[in-house]
Image (cartoon, rainbow, N blue to C red; front, side):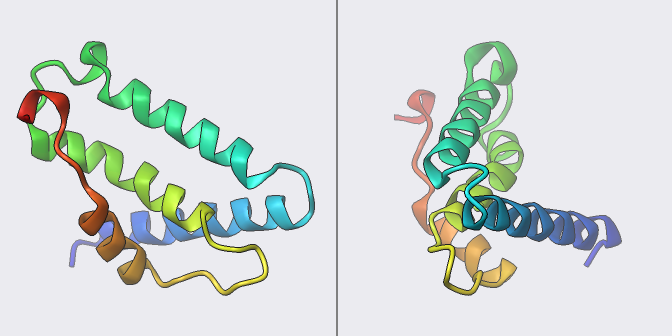
Length: 101
């Protein structure tokens, strides 16, 4: 595996863990994090940003956001699923984009 991919995997899990702690400490709610992540995904999939981008490129851009969304759905008192489990879940929940229907 490419070292950059491993670095991104570590970064994503670190951000997911920080989000988890922010919710546990009451700094943010999981709903607030979810809204922020959904806004980020909407910006990245909007026509202005993704116009002319292939579906696989859009998936690549949105993968980290979707992984963090799934990690955010975990209960604060529960253990965080592994990166591979979250990545598999991202693949299973993927829906076609409007221009693919």
